[in-house]
Image 1 (spheres, rainbow, N blue to C red):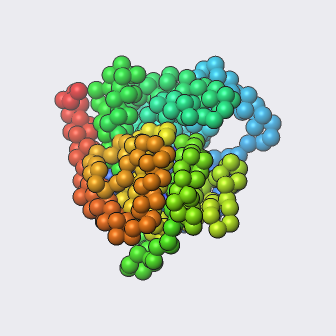
Image 2 (image 1 turned 30 degrees about the horizontal axis):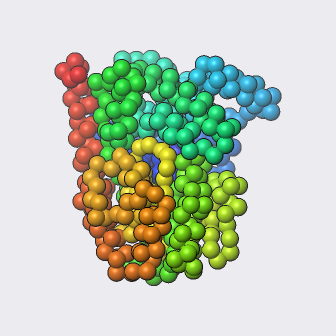
Image 3 (image 1 turned 90 degrees about the horizontal axis):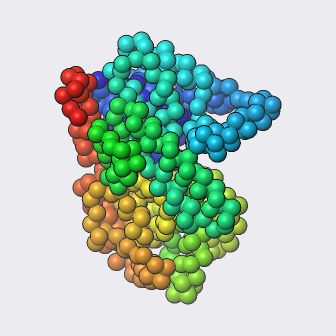
Length: 420
């Protein structure tokens, strides 16, 4: 197929879970299809050259659309319009903040050019451009998470009435907008069966909705080689959490771990040291830093050396949807993982012997203390996690599953009306 993929930013460097998933999806599709990617690039970006070169290497053609900044007056007007759209029209911020007229104009031109069989919007963030498609080309939206349930779960765990209200407004806007986007698209892809089922109900039925598995390829040169062929010596009594800290559910997980779990671990292992690794930590997370006990790194070029160095990997999530790339990444690196049930949500093959799954702070802390004290147990658990990743989540395995999903779309494009 001739695919035009639309994304709201260059999926490189691979700092976030979304970047890693989109990068590998593009690379997978380009194995058998004719892939063109279009993205906006801010004119103020001082040096996108390396990122552009990397992304050009995984698709046939990369189209970059320069987008302008705003004057201070435009920012004020834009802010008023943004809040009006959010509260009154129920347009989520992730839609209004990422829509660019220059991108919309270029998409209109490309959609009527006859060059593409499918115009594929790679996330709900780019779904705002669906109305700008001016042709009969098949439209695809996703893969994406259920942002409705995500907002609702964030509202439940928000620590203050003000934040609860904010997340309720997000939930209200997303409940209207995401199902409407899905109904407008010809096909929709989700990261997990659970997310698909929930949005399917809200949408009144999505006959052409499918689940796309996720892949992380740690051997890819774009991610950078790991130093050395053997894992480094683990730091004794070290625990690590990894996740983008611009996401509320990750911030909530960190604060919950620090308040409710870490004191119990410290009682059993006084020398425990915690690493919190993720970009954009808010002040509430930065303030947790404590010399010799808690390290908040902020953005790092590559999270993998930190993960390999730590003894135990923790996923104390209480909110969120979709597939947690942090879980798959830790599995790929053979880590001993302690997680809440939510950390395994969306995974399509789960071996409970490869994780320690804990539903309350006491059992979570006890599992961490036990693993810190027993290197052999940590090694065994990490080997089980790595074996599960090789069996079901490695790039080559997932690429074949992904291409099978797209083969169904290809048959539909070749003979419209032959599938639901």
